[in-house]
Amino acid sequence: MGNPFLDSSREGKSDYLTPLCSINKFKVAKLPVYNIDDEIEGLIVKEFFGVSVITNEIKKYLEKLNLQNIDSANEKNLPRLVAEKSQDLNDPEGAAVARDIMVRFGNRLGLMLLALKLGEPENRKARPEWSDEHWQYWADVKDIILVGGLASGIFGKILKQQVEYVFSLKGVEPYNILLYDNSSQVAVLGCASCIKEQNGVFVVMDFGQTNIKRCYISKCDGEVSEIHSLTSWPSQNMEWEIKNNDEKLRQAKELHSYLVSSIEHAYNEAKQQTNIEPGCEIIISIANYAVDGVLNNNRSGYAKLCMLGDNYADCLNYELSGRLRKDISVKLIHDGTAVALNFRNRKDTVCLSVGSFFGVGFPETKIV
Image (cartoon, rainbow, N blue to C red; front, side, top):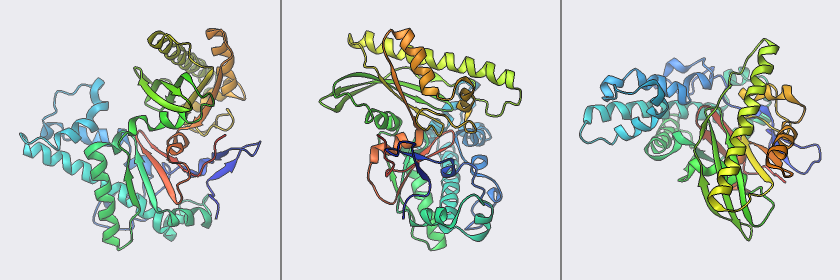
């Protein structure tokens, strides 16, 4: 059976994820196991899991965690600080609270995955856009690769442990949860694999909902020899639903200018640090279902960029070619696909990027 979440490009050479693959709006109408976290029943995934949800939960326990001095600018670091606190031998009470928080979200991840695995009637009814084929795909999946900030280190280990625990309560064989050590760079490595030139320095970007990761890589004889991370920029103008078209266009132009500047700065930094003119190919992972440079106009804060032209990659090519005085070729890749490209040809496998929201990728996706 083919993957019902994939479609082919217009040329038929590459595969692309359809928006149906998203699990962020999956409603867990019926919990597969009760007396673990019953309050999430009836909620959609993005309401009970993700960086902002976890951060807000942590903020309820700052005093017990002895983390009272965290200001708003550093709130984004709270999940990492909680993971560190769980190992604090000098504060056993704070460590226990930290571990309880991580266990809670590991249980929620387990409940979500078990609901997908079982495909019970109540949950199928709550996801009418999925056919039996879509549910069967999740039933047949064997391996799930967790990547992203929340899947790193001790937090990732507890997520895996609790997923297995939740499945055991139901007596169901769990997905084989695989953790990836270098998860912070996994999307960059996937993008790098799409660069056709065999040698040189190339700019690679990751446009996320929270941050813009800026990198350049060095290739030698077709292999990536080095990855250099540059300072990340905070994502801007990520509001999704803007009803006023004039305001939406204004923000789209502002976002475009910001993105172009982030790429141009990365290009010039790479040139300055290596004394080598970076190549014309620029590969960008983006939190949007991009197809041949065309963005999906209903998904993520990047959707508003559709107002600037039919093909956003062409918009970037035009702007950057003028600024950098050379013919630039930008390739946009859905962020989940960029992650999955690191695990090409694995069968019965789903990649889940655990961050602001869940990103989904399939290693069988063919990108030319």
